[in-house]
Amino acid sequence: TSLCGTIKEILAEPDDLSPAVINDIRSSNGVIQRRVEGLLDFSETYRTLTRSPPPNFQLVERDELRKDAAHLWRKEAEERGSELILHLPPSPLPLQGDPHLLEQVLINLVKNAMDATTGIAQAQVHLHLNRGNEGRALIQVADNGQGMTREQLDQIFVPFFTTKDHGSGIGLSLSRQIMRLHKGSIEVQSVEGEGTVMSLLF
Image (cartoon, rainbow, N blue to C red; front, top):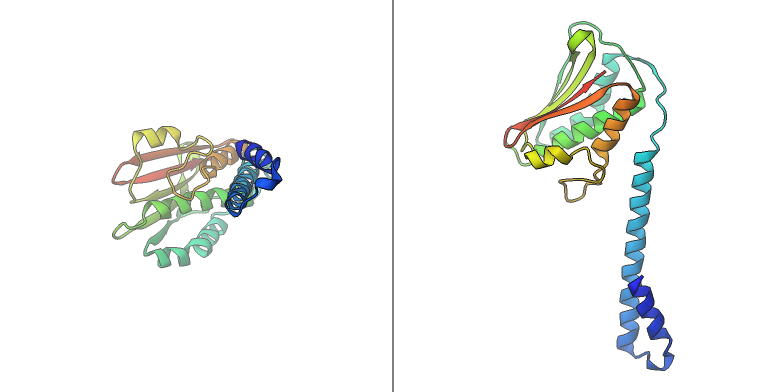
């Protein structure tokens, strides 16, 4: 708004438009354009966060989740010098849920785990599919990365909070919202310098 006012004042005196002044107008216009584009990105991100589609519940088998995780992340893990390890229960572990939304949650969690292990020697990301208390389905993503501070743990589900240089800060907020739509929960345990475990309980 301030820049728009400045440009308006400059253009009110067209006879004073020297090359230097014209350059100032161009620079100010560029800043305005970048800020508008940033606001558009922000509003689109906010819309994504607040308008999650309702789940299309169906039976989801463990092998589907396993194959999806392997296909999505095996190659990237190798390129990053990390190891993706899948842990499967001995018996089938079906659950009711929306496979596309759950896949999005897993993408968020595995990506965060990969990012957390960047630069870590013998980096590993573990994906556990198991049964929790009372036979409920439990999915865990664990890494041996840098872990989080107490302050970070207190804020990781706050929309737009991020510890990454290029993060949007909506991945975990969206994941928690999806889990609530599934009548489930998402929990985090982390030790700074040792790693993090994200747990999905259905």
